[in-house]
Image 1 (tube, rainbow, N blue to C red):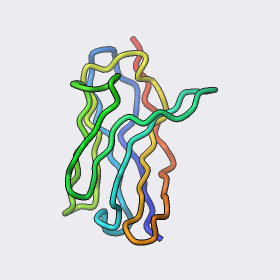
Image 2: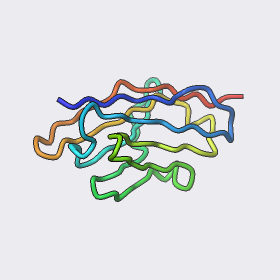
Image 3: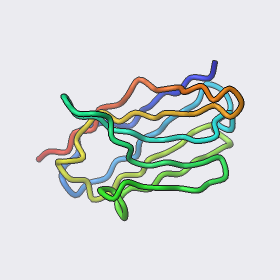
Image 4: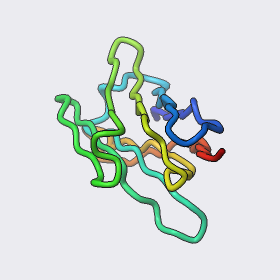
Length: 117
């Protein structure tokens, strides 16, 4: 089964930027939809951004205008560009994919983003 692996997290100051990557072990086009979620301790995972196989995107209100989700089919990767970061963006960020034909859900292992001065 295709796996998803996130990378790109780290420590950044408020107002800074990070770009997260979600790399598929196989074809990223195996997925009908790829989502980015985030989670802080003792809270449920929050949907941050979505991109479909057709390239349609959607964002949580809390990140609109600051985050951009995109995909590069040539290298089987989905990105989350995060600008104007705030301390409240601190979380573990996960990518999630829904496979086109089996409808199976695949989660990555997560990457930590910390926004702090």
